[in-house]
Image: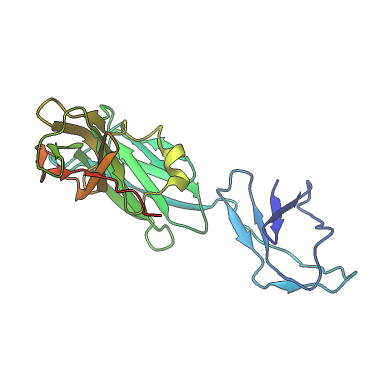
Length: 253
């Protein structure tokens, strides 16, 4: 059963024989007709746009969809020990497809999106080693995923006079290719969001950052805010420069 969409509006569903009729389409506009499953994991569209005259009925012919979708397979390995990672979870954050690796660390994910790359997340059974990687199954059907330990970062929050700020809220937010379109779905796979408050000396320590990912460290206290960017590295805690927070200046009338 497929949903058919034209002009960005939900139109109808195919019947048991795969037939569909799309009524009440606006004439005079160039339309692209797309078919997709309800889970949005498979999608295809007619190769050519169509413009209808008033009262015209157009036979679009047959649209062939790859019902198996795209797939990607490979091996998940511990990057430090260079050994396979059995029973590691591998998930595509776009579709929610997931699987566990076998005893040799092998995995396969199928029914992936036809129109965009997979965003693969893997984590070991202890939830302490992760990897996040974008893979385009059109170009790469096999991939090795290297697990690395979660990173941590520590530093100090200071004000404009370089005085330590106690009790400031400090949060690490992912940047780069990770955006809100999939974050909600990815929350069940990702480690807890790194957040904390500074101690009386203005010191903070954020944990559970993904190795190799861009983060924005944001601090706020009493209306003053500041941020810095960094790329997380697994292993020892990363020491970063002081994070200066600035009071927001009122906008003049």
